[in-house]
Image 1: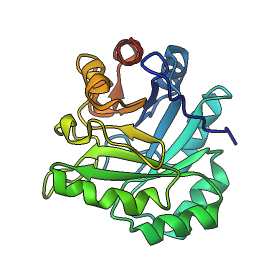
Image 2 (image 1 turned 90 degrees about the vertical axis):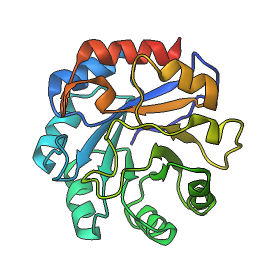
Image 3 (image 1 turned 90 degrees about the horizontal axis):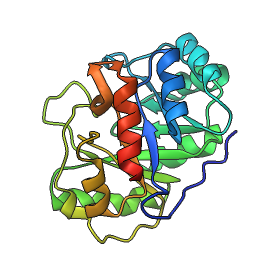
Length: 223
């Protein structure tokens, strides 16, 4: 298991998660560009979905020292077990409607650090964060999906970053939602984020990563 350290420096220490990787060449591109986390989506409705065998092959391409993260949406224990038994992972990201109790249970049963995604569109949504901070190893603050959306994330939407400016956090956290090479530096400046997550913002088409955009995003996040 990789020890998932969090650099709290600014801004050169910003750590980047490239999520929704589906091809070995894109895994290599993300790692070579300096990504700290690589995300693999286990959600059939997503254009970035990978099967367990595909994910294992992709993870084995990734170099040692880069954290491999499984994105799960309301997964059952059996589904999680099938993934973690076959794929050498470093973290589970729960991106569905999992309660704090469910987060704690997954963390206890599978022995991996857990990141919980929390959707935000208005100030009232921030009230959910303390409950998750109490049980998760990290928090992913993401843009809330539109009502009726098929995907809980990866929709290319952002939220008003000023909602979390100056906030103090009980856990390491990561900013997501609508980030691109063009806006990530401003997002970091406004929020104080030292970790950022991107998926659709570095794609040429849904599910198709663009190595040049990956490199540009990481450079902008750190710059």
